[in-house]
Amino acid sequence: MNFSGKPSEAQLAPFVGKDVLDIAQFSKEDLEVVMHLAAHYEEALTNKKRLYDMDGKIMASLFFEPSTRTRLSFEAAMQRLGGNVITVAEAAGAQSSSTAKGETLHDSIKVINDYVDVIVCRSPIKGARLEVANAADIPVINGGDGAGQHPTQALLDMYTIFKEKGSPDGLTVALIGDLKNGRTVHSLADALSLYDVKMIFASPEELTMPEEIITSLRGKNIEVEEVHDLDTACRRADVLYMTRIQRERFTDPAEYERVKDLFIMTGRHVRIFKPGAIVLHPLPRVNEIEVEVDAYPGAAYFRQAANGLPVRMALLAMITGNVK
Ligand code: NCD
Image 1 (cartoon, protein in one colour):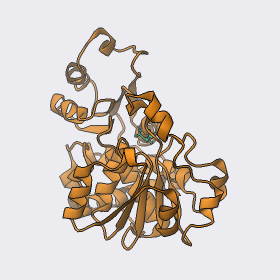
Image 2 (cartoon, helix red, strand yellow):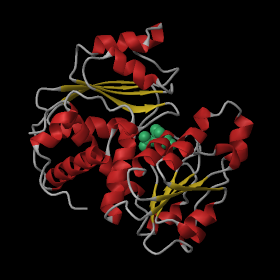
Image 3 (cartoon, protein in one colour):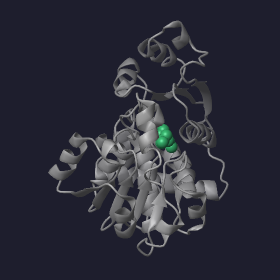
Image 4 (cartoon, rainbow, N blue to C red):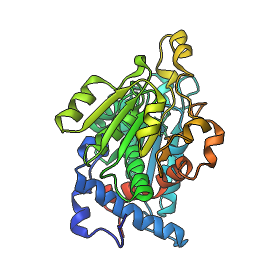
């Protein structure tokens, strides 16, 4: 990866005032401007440089579904940029905001819109990103909408692939696990399709990638292969992207029990990897990667989580027009 310096004002101008809702809104050039700016902020973090890009600005983080990395890395990102944060973090059943009184997401966003400069929102409802965007005049970022999209995760995943492998071009990338319900893989497949990659989708039969995503990838001439075992992916891929079976999306607990232990990566798999293969996971993991895999040098999931910070700094600063 060679993203030295900072993107130019002309490169940054088209992002000002934009929402980040869906990965499909990013062209390859856009994606690389984000990578470039993230590398700039990463360097500042490494050098312990104090930043004031978002001095005097406020971010609202509204999380109506559990989150550790996405919420805390957005909040840390805002604070690392010299800005401030207000938060509503509440899963169903443990509410303290007026959603518990029956206020709609639309009304909450409309009000919060007048308090802050940028909103990051996570909702359990697929498609809620549009409701949030429609209610707000200020830039909003989708922090995950149900089984829909998770664009900022896909951007940090791409940043990790650039850092670990130089470029996505020429790679075989396996997306593994709950491809039906996992929003991270829905967004990442789209981001990867901007590059010359081959994709392997490895999942239990019940949890395959939605047909419309496969059709759209094939329409872009991406080679996609669907398999139902982990070994094939481990033998052939340069990037192994593991995911958690998304228990909260199952209506039938028996169905979850049936599939939950089918794709578990162990030391045995590591021994059949291609040389130089890396393992990614958006985290949290449950049991799908055994702890013994962590010692493999290409186990990059904790480095990947750390990359969330500079990538989210880049997104916050660019859409609010505050890159200094
Ligand atoms: C993911 C999510 O929320 O979709 N987590 C994250 O943001 N890093 C993945 C998951 O919950 O399995």
